[in-house]
Image 1 (cartoon, rainbow, N blue to C red):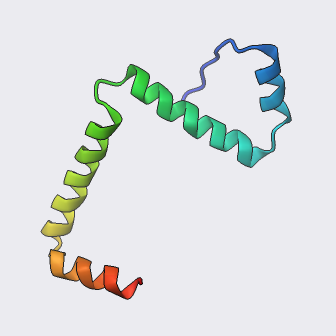
Image 2 (cartoon, rainbow, N blue to C red; image 1 turned 180 degrees about the vertical axis):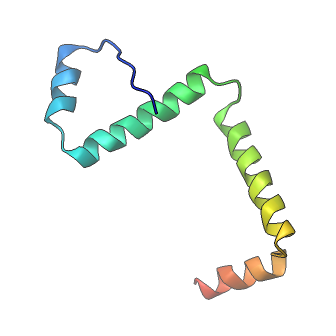
Image 3 (tube, rainbow, N blue to C red; image 1 turned 90 degrees about the vertical axis):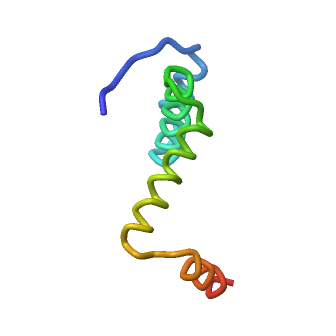
Amino acid sequence: MKTIAINVPPNLAEAFEKADAERKRTAELYINAWLVDFFGNQSANERLFDIMKTATAEANAKGFNETELQELLKSDE
């Protein structure tokens, strides 16, 4: 990761500085996701579908199939 600096209103800077570590981490995750959407070449949906296609291909390559998935889902109920 690389750090960047952006200007924000003083009240937001103060709120961030006073937040606990978990709240700061959550804010950073949201901001990172927004920046990826804003500057990225793909929409969030396109990225999600790409991830799903990759995961499906990897699962198939390792012999995991739809029947096994359904069994796992049933056992989780």
